[in-house]
Image 1 (cartoon, rainbow, N blue to C red):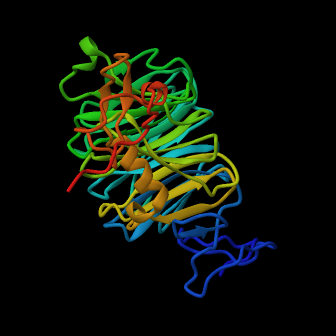
Image 2 (tube, rainbow, N blue to C red; image 1 turned 180 degrees about the vertical axis):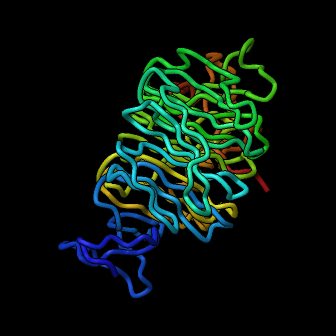
Length: 347
């Protein structure tokens, strides 16, 4: 294990020099009070960890930090804060978003040599950058509220969306088919843009606005596009149900705002990094068995029907019989017999 004066280059190194260590189980998984999802904390940076990604078939984690480093097998030192980093799907390139130059820098992943440096790519700080699944374009978002796609072959910006959010855009991510781009913003919303067809130009993006109580700072799709994860300045990580455009479950654990999230290809793991200087590995393989999630799913799957007496809609819970319950609870309570629940069936 590394000492404070000799920071390890391995991003999976778990430091032991921190004075106060949380209690750990024998298998090395950290015991977080009230948490029902196993989590492992990775320490190795000297400042806030700003970005994290699974790569190389989920065998490595790529991360960047406000300590001006990007960690994989090697470490690159920049002159300014590294706000973001991302690795191409073929593992050949790493892109970093830099603060002072409002720039993106594309680097060879094997030897850390510079491929391209695009200075003043945005009018303000580049908050996040990522490769598309074809490894041809780099999407970036900024404090200037714009979205840009830079083409590695054309060496120029091919798509620009100005005023895409009402506040700073903090993150962006592609679906595996490259069709959709999700952006997260300090306006507390996430937006999903149909980039491949350009449908957003006529129909606008899909907006997810009922999740974070503070600024949304990061987002990530699962490979199949069925699951969207986001993190926020409220210190929470949220699973989103894209079909219902609503949040599925909220998980807590970080002690400061969540700055980035990523999902493993098998959807069993989430890695999140935070301003608290840690990365947390969440095992979500069995999260569907957690009672709170089962209850949330049950409520979301319950149908809404119209009361035959007052014509107002009400939620029909799964244990209710739609053939017996035809009135809302208020109309049932107002009836002379006050039958809130249906009578048992006769045999």
